[in-house]
Amino acid sequence: MHKDVPDVIVGARKHAPLLVALGDEENFIASDTPAIIEYTKKTIYLEDNEIAVVTKDKLKITDIDGKEIIKKVEILPWEPAALSKQGFKHFMLKEIHEQPDVIRNVLNGKIYDIDAPVRLDEVKIDKEILKKLNKIQIIACGTSLHAALAGKYLIENFAGISVEVEASSEYIYRKTTTDSSTLVIGVSQSGETADTITAIKQAKEKKSHVLIITNRPDSNMARLADSLIPVNAGIEVSVAATKSYSAQLISFYLLSIYLAEIKGSLDKDYLKNIKHELIKIPSKIEEILSDIEPIKACAKSFSSYKNFIYISRGINLSTAYEGALKLKEISYINATGYAAGELKHGPIAMLDETMPVLAILIPGGVTYEKILSNCEEAKARNAKLIALTSSSDSNLESIFNVVIRIPSVSEILSPAITCVPLQLLAYYIAEFLGKDVDQPRNLAKSVTVE
Ligand code: M6R
Image (cartoon, rainbow, N blue to C red; front, top):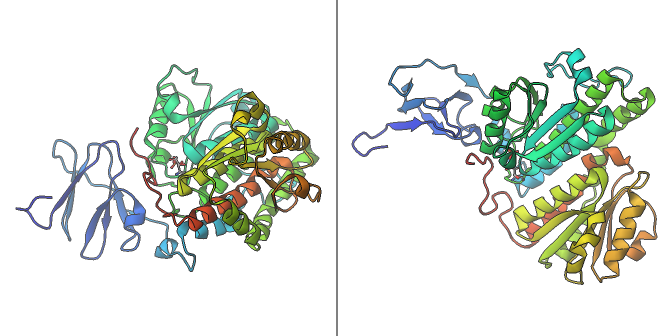
């Protein structure tokens, strides 16, 4: 803007998102749609090196040489109501409560009959190529990286395809083995994370097929995709990702089942059971959300601790990482996720009565007894213990200071449920501490710088 030219805004885009929105006798320039959805749904996304000159009733877009460009006006799919807290104190709490419907939405049209194969028409790779696929790389950051870790576990377990998961910020500064036969999956809530966009561009240069899992089909990343799985979680306002994480997780369940069905790598009855259980996940989350008092009480009694350790094994290791990240982000308490078996290789030295250990342990699988014995080791060092479990074993109360119970669920599907109490625990601890839950310090919803 310039003082000699009032009522004119000039915007230029370079390596960070920028859009122009067209209202009624008012136009806008913004970096993301939540800023304008209250006023208009008509948007134009600028590309790098494009320049927009905007007044309240005129718009001119040019390239860097001043040549005018006519761009498509897109209509946003969201209602302004998506930006209301709808009676909740914070967006984060509202978004946690939206998860059952978000998951129903992700599953909708994908599993329509448990006897029929999962439909994932979004994957634009020939099934014969998928049958022979033997390498997948998943790149993401933060919470999306944790969904990716669960995705690795699922794809390797269900489809037997080798999967590497890497933080985008690491992937982009090394020599990778990505090639034209690698399926590269980028995961991102915002679809605008600079590190992940750079990683995707590098993978495309190596001629890999790029599949993007994002909550923003209107994003830059989505536009780079060869295959696009939009997770349809609706707009997420809280900086701490919750419902978009659940939606990413469910997308990985669908993708891994889809790959397993193409490869014929799983027993039909097992697949049927998994699909049957997947459909029931939303109502199990509703059960948790209908009685959050035990989680609130736990949050209150643990809110004065300065450090936490979250442990688990197997598929819930990613949940431990994610639960610890949620706590760090919104309460500023130091929390670290560890593979429970790794405690004895170092972290155990930190344990005493000032370091609570939260363990995620789901019976029926291979990890329960092992995690339990890791917890006993922690108890012997005077650590306060919290269990997050679907076990009904009343002996747990004699080992753990607090037991948070969730509905019965198989270990392989449990991350879709175990994430919810951990989101609530982080939320209520931050709330008790009076933190700015929706906009934690030093964080942004889209990280558009490398
Ligand atoms: O939009 P993305 O999923 O690519 O963002 C990645 C991270 O910046 C993001 O997940 C961050 O960790 C969130 N604040 C998580 O709550």
